[in-house]
Image 1 (cartoon, helix red, strand yellow):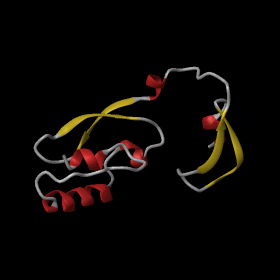
Image 2 (cartoon, one colour; image 1 turned 180 degrees about the vertical axis):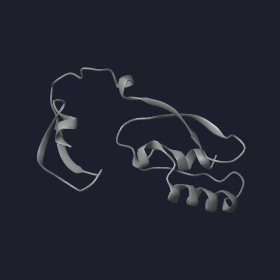
Image 3 (tube, helix red, strand yellow; image 1 turned 135 degrees about the horizontal axis):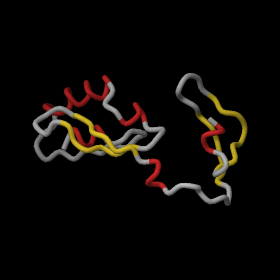
Length: 105
């Protein structure tokens, strides 16, 4: 994990976690990025079900479920969609790509 954020960040302490997940503290250095933010973007598609089918989807590295629709998010969408009243307001705030908010529109 530390190698993934250097040289733009200086890691403080050691990384915690196992598998694909890591938690670490880092401080931004004064070094400039070698690539623009757009170079990190992954353009693909995501099918959230419903009449719209697959739609264009843009993600960046490090998002929950890799920016895809995991089984539990799908279950939550399938459960919430019919239960929400028309015009309900939904806030999708977390570490994902916005699949819940988009799926509940």
